[in-house]
Length: 79
Image 1 (cartoon, rainbow, N blue to C red):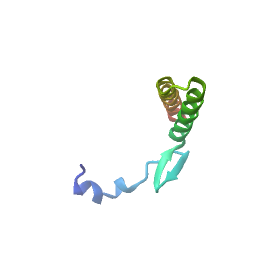
Image 2: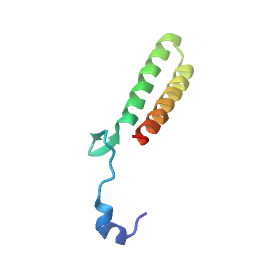
Image 3: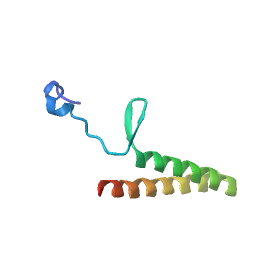
């Protein structure tokens, strides 16, 4: 919860954005998060089709999405 004084101060009104962002429903999302979600979805579908089982598909997709998310976050923070 924030205090009223923090919302009145003009220095808090500056946007803190990254260079690569996409607006989704008016909210800026870093591009690396969307890439990680897409990779996770593709892996989920691919492993699900190959194995015809939900457990390995979900676990593999979660691992792939997390790895891409963290890897691209580190890469984006170094720019």
